[in-house]
Image 1 (spheres, rainbow, N blue to C red):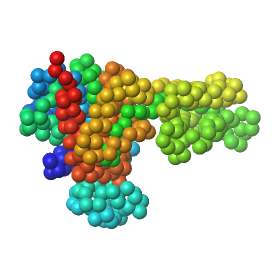
Image 2: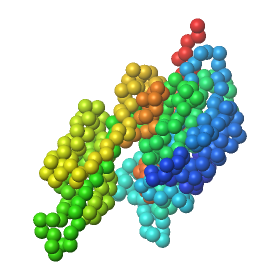
Image 3: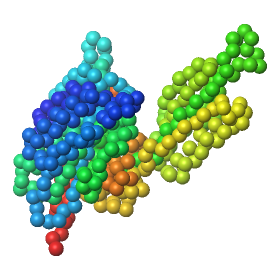
Length: 413
């Protein structure tokens, strides 16, 4: 199984599927179509049924039930795109057999080293087979490892019909990294009662809480006058933007928060004297605190409008997704079964909030409760990304065990 997973992940990783937030197509990039079409052919080759890819690049397939029990249909999902934070072009995965616990030289020419002195969690992987980058790109294990694990689990179940299971649906989605993953996902066509995204990090992660999320774009209009004669006339939009940002609590930013703490995150600032635009994301687990954060943004803007004029400050704010716990808690059995599956396999479940979002954050509000399980990866979205193949095998086994438990826990009439 290890070799199958290595082959799959390295093959998928070499396709540039980085999503593009400036594109208005779905998928947002052509590389995602390339991977989608490859996955369609692979699903057919391993024996999956009802294999489809729709006009928006969503791949779906079915593993038919092989039991007489009325087992709920469950689904497993992973996303095809890679993050926008770091290049996903020309990925060259490297295999480290029996990792010795020391520094890993990713790129000799550029002197790029993956070191336990910088990433202490590497010490957990001594003796493992690792897949790393070559130091010039991300790896794309987020979330191509999830695709490889789902594909490998389905192939195993097909080859082992003695394992009884209900109907299983799988889906591979575009544009998760730019927040659009479920936007055109056909929940009715998918037809599952519950689903799992296989999109987590280290061994044992089991997540059913995500941020409530919003984005804000604030535009500041200035008045440019020659600096030699600007007294009483110039309005510097850059300084308006700086004044706005200074009103936000400095310690409520990603670099100062953890656990259940929310934040305001300044993503970008573009501007000059005449016009400046700030882009923020706003995050909190508690819905009330989330709404209060959005109100704070509006209140600061209103104060500056009162000071400088309404025309000087324009604000655009919209919600992105909500805490999926609100929809999953009432059907907690979907989490409990994943928890039991891990315990059965000797894996200690690590239940913690996702300081971010997954496709499941939106899908849960679309009527498909979807918690998240681990892939085995670390340091996503950058040159130091790596994944343990040993833990990828464990992720495959968890998928198989979940499928088995749903069948075993279904009683016959």
